[in-house]
Length: 576
Image 1 (cartoon, rainbow, N blue to C red):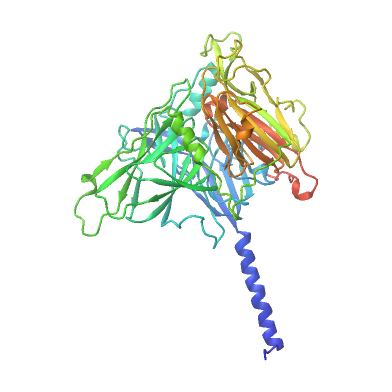
Image 2: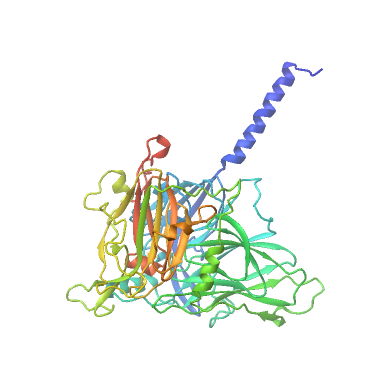
């Protein structure tokens, strides 16, 4: 007979309470605090020292390491001469649009001597993302990884790695990048290309004067490593490969994917990719180059150099051979314009779509949009000589609208109903005039300009086709959407056909991403659910194209219920 004395009953209640409390804590996440001091620092690369903008004097910047469900609070203090804002790239920012970061879209920038606290919760996401400056070209040195681990006790849907290593690619100019882009925007010409790419902040041994500035990954034989790849370069998509080693892709843009093996990874600016590296079972008596170089399709000049790190095996305890005497194997990277391989790689990325990680693809569509994305020209201001073709200025546009940044943040204007004179809601849902988008361009390739947005009702399902154009030259454009993930339901080459192409859409397990490459001379179709009230930026992640106007914004209205509305701004929101 079971005793049911008051004392034993008390202990039973206490133990149930403690257990449920622990279970709840495991699910709820914790609050993590970070401090970002924006400060200048002298850094030497390619035998040349320059003063760069950093977070806490670190380059690349510090890693934000959290778990799914955690609340993240980052106090950013600006000690430099430039206005600054920080974007948490790929974080959904559910009802926390004030913390998204793009200057003049969700906030006015943080001015010199001022600070701002970014406050957001990681909801339903796990994997690799990154943070970067989101004003002018400051993200060239202001960037760092965001590592989101699963909730405590929740395993990966792939073998547990022995070690995890962030690898963040960047781009380096010897000259001052703020001067470069400001001059280019004044003259209408193309900005100077970079002098090197970087691998965790280091150019690597293939550049002059850089053999000491090389990232080395030391590994043990017979182990599995998770490499968290991030492309933080300003203007270039990259192919990545490790000599004599295969990789297994397991996640893209912080979403698990059906694993597949590859020896080449394509990663556009703004994208992240997690890969598993299985090391050889025995020490190979060799070292291996890990290299990245550009995938480039446009008409403009580009930095056709290669950044690299070195994969080194820990020597066996009885080894006497020195590392520098070992053979160095180099990977075979694709030619710079290998669109066939780039497309093949992109098509292999598919959502896991398991019971635990379903792909919630919108099956019905409330709002259809078709956006042309590409380059164009704008007229030279009076009494000025410009460096674009025939004394014009280079420009870029979405549906022939080159976006003009407002003087105060759109989110504030929207929230307080003060849009008059700041933006209009007449962004075209379709190209304003039809032409053979990927054939011979029309005679008039001048863009229009304005601060135009699209307004979406809360919870509407959206289908967006993005069509590249051949104006000035066909080119791959990595488009990034803030505040949402979207499903890449279709892509193709030539002009999108609304009658025949939808029949080929993948509505079962398409890739779920925040950044997608619009194919050079082709199109991509995405779907997303507008379930996040606020103002959300969408732009090309090639920074030069963003500077030229290849950007726009979506306004998602509040829903009817309290948890479907954007809360008021924090008291320390920066002022313009």
